[in-house]
Image (tube, rainbow, N blue to C red):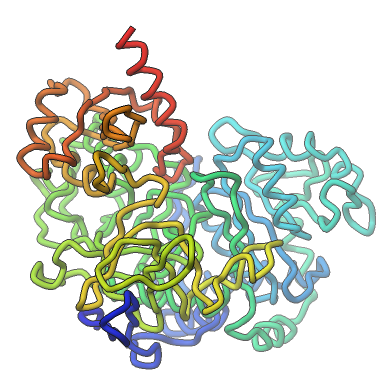
Length: 569
């Protein structure tokens, strides 16, 4: 299905996916319609599994998922939620996050997930930018008490009256709700009290609202992780989110009996799409762990017979280092690539191909190009896939916006079925070009057969001695170097070369990794101009990250430049 693309004019860098109408496996193109379909089809099957702090395990069937989402929807109607009104959701990966999100779209609102990694200042920005009228929070997350944080940011919340919150700081906010509370605290209403408030709202009212929603309406306001600056609010349509929810199982080659665990927060689009789409679109089970703890995660994989874990490379290393890794029975794991460190466990046997050669953004609600799991190497050929159905990719001159000749490197621009409605508060003409493409800020090229090659952020491309070096390519090679746990390549100003290629490496604990060894490995696999002139060893906490494993490149460049300058003194 993703084995080819249409190249309208071989002279210019534009490639199109097949028409969306030809994509298999798509259902209703609203998120509320997707929920109705999957819960109706798989009603008695297990949908969600949630270990609780008291040692118990909560389990929801698909029928439960529908009922709990409807419960939230009725309560939001009782709160006065109007069509398109935004509901801020600040919570970890727990069942209530999912019912809050799905309940919001059933009620005709727009869900706005907020990162639990946020500092008070960042959270203040997110609440203001979301313009949410209802805010639902999990109070205690890794030592943070979000009820106290938010009430301190805006004391008006404590003065909630019969008409709700009246705030100048958050002028649209009318209701604040907190999970796990037994009584009202600092103006936050307990979750159970909130749920009881909708008991007199007829189901037919919610059904009428859900039926009135169109694929073009906004379903989610997701915020970028902020690796290149202040987070942007990205309005994703029902159609865009629903397409990706239906699509993920096909891309990953998942089966109806999968038990999926996602290691990262659902407030980011990729974990949300992979988790809900990968598990629930096909009748599988989504296993939830509120926060990532390697030892608890290993125990969870064993106890719940997880088949498909979805996370970032540095998390696999943490799982392998867990004290219970060696003794655990991990034989249930199926969707683990043979090169994943977990696959070296004696109980794991798998030949599953992880579809890592994919490309996308929050602005396209995850994927815009890719290959399905199982694609042979002669088709992969180092690319990041063909445009997915309904998507078009262009390589343009980042200054003029003109499409470049086929094969030339430039800025990737995308448009199509899953493209965002726009950034919250930003005019469309400042977001899309004259042809409706979204300029991604990412560098790459398209080959003559329509394959898309992503080479990283344009401002990350290293220009050394007149040649361009993709940090993504160098990182991918050096991650295979024995003893290397994390690698990030940056360009450092150099009077002779313009920029010098420098690799920042975090070694596995106890590994004997040297600068000479890393450079020797690079020489075996990379052209000479791509080989790092220097290798700088850092601790993991020195890599400034956003929480989604995206290293803040500008901060890292400054750190490395300072280290090298100190060495030269």
